[in-house]
Length: 207
Image (cartoon, rainbow, N blue to C red; front, side, top):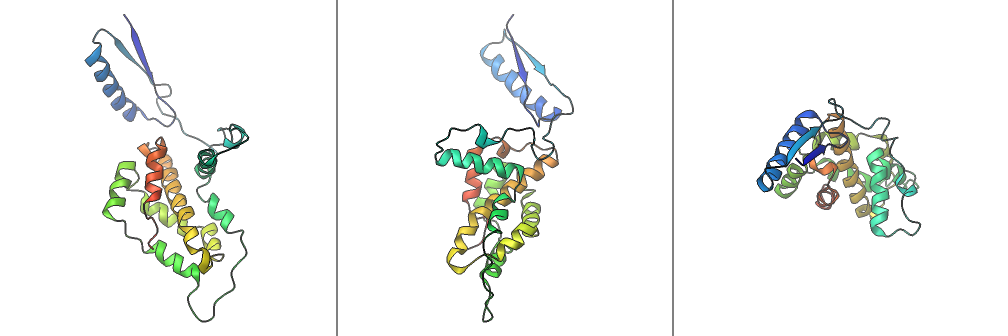
């Protein structure tokens, strides 16, 4: 008799594994009832990355020397998975803009937009699909109260205000993914880059 063994990946807990195993077994038996499907749950307690994914090879060490836009995106997210505030730390290194004694600073405007965002129904639906709806607000709070974010606000000018939206959106989504892993959850966004990018493309910052 032919046997199919289902081996899970990292981060999977027993409950999620059993649910997936049942689906796989049903699908296989629908086509080939003679095939035996056997589980292989290595590590009943599951697995998780320690030390900010220190065991994962650096992305730039595994890519070709000539990188296209897709490769650059892989490298960027590789950094964000290890440190959700990575881009904000880079922005915080820019020169601090001079204070405006006559009006609101660009950084204040940006902070107001980030803090006042009310997710649209489209964004809420996409967050639900991605499995991070419950951790979206904690993720946003963690980002806007972080030192790199506060320092990055000081470097914002009126001319490049819109350039900060995407890095902040990526930081919030990466932080939500990080929180999910800390909670030992395994939402779809962790393994679906296209879904992740669709979430980021929606307005996570009020404009």
